[in-house]
Amino acid sequence: MNTKNDFFEGMSKSELAIKIQTVIQTYEYDQEFSFPLLSDLILKKHYYCSRHNLFPVLFRKKPNARNNYYLEAHFPAHGWHRTSWYECVYPKNHKKILEQRLRYAVYPQIIAYKNKHPICEHCGHNPSEEVDHISPQFNTIIENAMSLTPTMNLEVSQQKMDWLTQKPLLLPEDHPSIEYVLKIHECALLQAVCRPCHREITIRRRMIDDDLRYAA
Image (cartoon, rainbow, N blue to C red):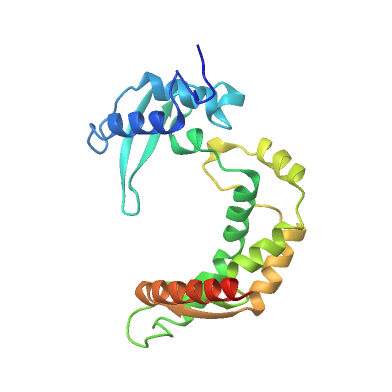
């Protein structure tokens, strides 16, 4: 009998995640393997595959510096495609999807700024690796932009997305949220920083925000 904690095949989300991770860890990079439980999960829970009846028959791990590996799934007639089992278990909400698309939109501006400032503007020694948003902070820009996009529009655009192209779905440049982000971001106060400095700045900024919150 199903319980309220059952998510898939009698397992909770956390139990399912542990099982999938345990099995995947037994395989080497680029080693092809079948995993019926994961195939069924993607068929039934993946936002695109579930609508188009796409069933992966094989999987393989590919090296990834950030997360140790990413997963590719093989679909008959469509070949290999990067696929996230994690997003089947813990799907992104529409707000997260929009935030990701807005980040894609300003990425060229961020890269251009970093290329113009190859040395960290904070310490003055290390090569710059990232861009810090001094004012307004990037989260503030994103939050204001997202208020311009109704949730229904996000749902419609996601349904039209062709996941098999492996390209990120970008909102049109004349979309109100995109226009707002590009306009504000172009005038924002930025600084190119190395990763250690960016981490230090972020921690200090959070501490200040916490102090202001407690003082309010």
